Length: 217
View 1 (cartoon, rainbow, N blue to C red):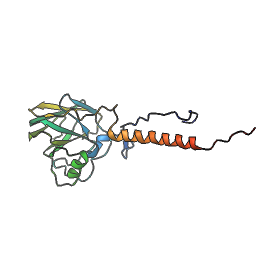
View 2 (view 1 turned 90 degrees about the horizontal axis):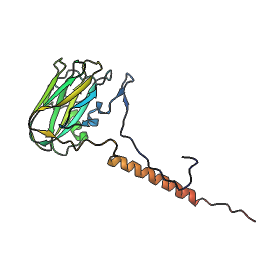
View 3 (view 1 turned 60 degrees about the horizontal axis):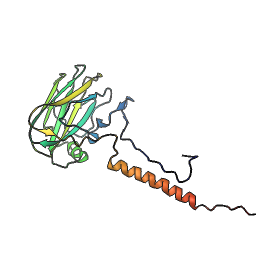
View 4 (view 1 turned 180 degrees about the vertical axis):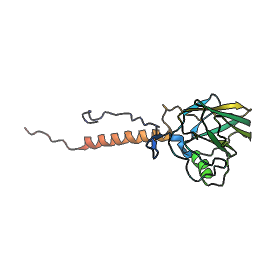
């Protein structure tokens, strides 16, 4: 910011985007890790590009029927309306995908807390499939309001494809208000913005306190 007049102020906008890299050097989606799971709800289908050449899922969890977990993508949901729910998963290139879903976690459970329970290895998925097919279906029953559920979808084929999943049956619904607008800073990001502004202000004050040599006549 050199060359700007002293006293100018700037709004610092942070980005939520996080980039990870696998051993292959390819970018890994942020929700390739349990603690970075993205929120989903039941209003509309979720479609995302499947990871390719991005290795296996993190060690620790008991993946039960998933004897391998290549190219993982994690999502979570918070139940609003109790009941049962069926989630259908398909993909554009009709290749092999698999899934596991864990829950229920108590209302208010954070991603980190849920993932800590999963990573402990003592919690089996409520439902999983390692079928070899291009379409999968997760079924959860007797879910209650406020419960948290964690969904893992893997691209076993390792081929490029767009994976789609959506609720297809059941009376249970998920909370769509937990899906943040990426253009709106989070609480943590606002903290970074404020700290940045305070740093700029402090620097300006220090500059203004420097003695100014006066010209003698």
